[in-house]
Length: 323
Image (cartoon, rainbow, N blue to C red):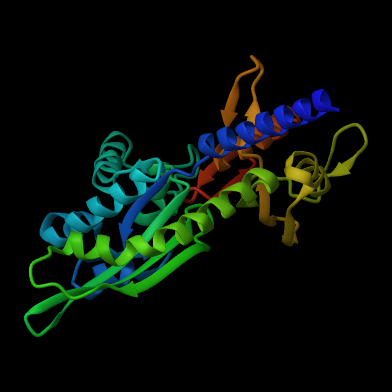
């Protein structure tokens, strides 16, 4: 009886250790950014033409270069998360990486049609940074007589879907001498355990059920075929072949075909695996590009060329008929 009890305790101890190690290995990568409201209300903004529609977007570079309080607060928030073991990406460094990418490749076009890729600056930043979670931070330093205090709103956003997965808001205690970053630290510390628990619940759900992304299948006008054309020895319609591929490759077959015509398929709530084993037995992270690239290779094996466009981290367009 005593031997069995010892074995049981040993088993539980090893299981607990494995669960702890798994949790530590799978923490999300985070990037802290100022909220749109913070930037735009202070004039740190730029206009962007998105397929004919004018959008006003935050200008992070200008904000970081001209707002010393913002830099200090972002640094402090990053330090708070690092102290809790969460990997971080630095916003300022990622902006530099994005500028370098633009310098090396100013545009991505179709080799035959010359069509440009539609991608907003924030989508491009998310794609380059490859963070799992965006910590969207809004704050304001207010005065109460000779004292100052900080009011903050912090949201954890899935970088792939922009869905909020955690959030806290509050105000700190007034102080006559504390700097903005110390005011923020005092204000948020009591909330961070609940905030981080929300992040981990979301990340653990992704490992269990897959990361959520969007995929659109389109057809070049000059191809001569469409999604109702039949391919393969069994003469299946192309739309059925593609839908079957999603059923076979999504986690637990989870996806939603929300719209489809002879020239268009829109897949939403597509659950892709977080990791996969490559042909050499190595574990590789899976993102939207690599997932849809597998579909591209599959269709290319059937004699169907295609062009892959990325719109940020969480959405891909696969356009059939040419590269």
